[in-house]
Image 1 (tube, rainbow, N blue to C red):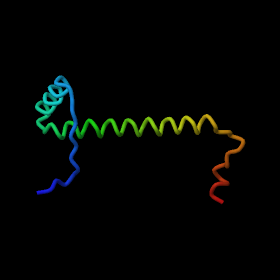
Image 2 (image 1 turned 180 degrees about the vertical axis):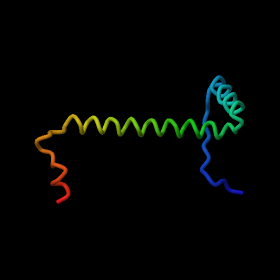
Image 3 (image 1 turned 60 degrees about the vertical axis):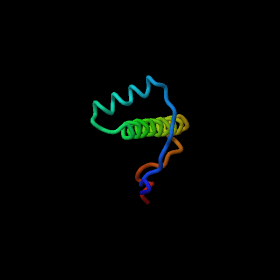
Image 4 (image 1 turned 90 degrees about the vertical axis):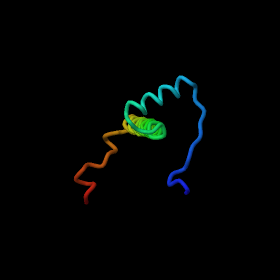
Length: 75
């Protein structure tokens, strides 16, 4: 039976594997779910950092005199 989601194979140190197994056991979930959750969290943090940097860049280039007032934006 084919898997619903793509599979990924990776190599980790023994200490990392022990840590992952410990987390899986403590949470009562599979090793695969632990790794999936960690990867999702890192992806979310990476995306948040990207948008925070983009916001800082836009804020640094913002010139209030060039901005369109709220009232004019809806004309």
